[in-house]
Image (cartoon, rainbow, N blue to C red; front, top):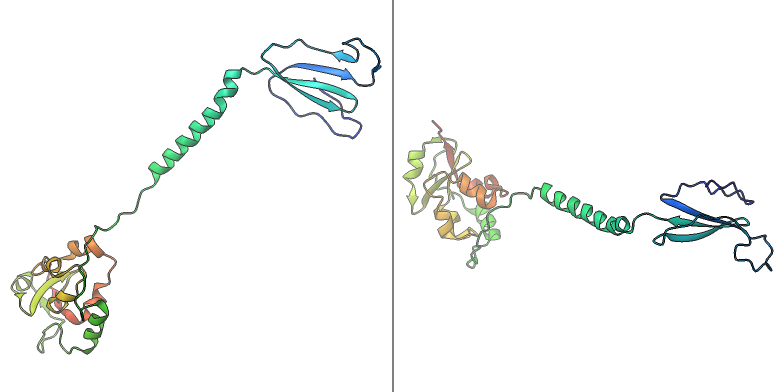
Length: 215
């Protein structure tokens, strides 16, 4: 049923879904009339399951009836919750967690072997790499690296560079045993597994022996 604009120029033109019953009353009808149908201009019989909402426009009073199935109304919140849950699960599945480095056990530093102590040592020691006058720009074969695994000469290859890590042993946060796994071989993959973010070129700058001579 379409209603004309009321005296305050408010229009009741919004569409209401599932309307199957409307009752229109004329409030200007004689108030003293005891007839129950007095003032009713039009009425439609409604099913028992319908929900009635009364509203007034001007001098007219009317009921808007919702006759949509109860089962459908009860399922709407469940449907919305199900859709939200589906979106949440899908979003969580789409997230690709960043790869984290492997957990590493830290060993307590001995007194005088902290990272700050290492930095001080690199600034004051004249020959941490034990070059003994040789250039650290020379090419070194992997076979030569394997021959230096004891005493003050413990060589390793890291990202194509050869370092003598003997002086760094006690300063290593993961302990001597872990660092010994890098001696005499290319430790690049092992290094990246535990602390790829560390700037080894700066940390071991004074331990540089040369560059690996790749075949």
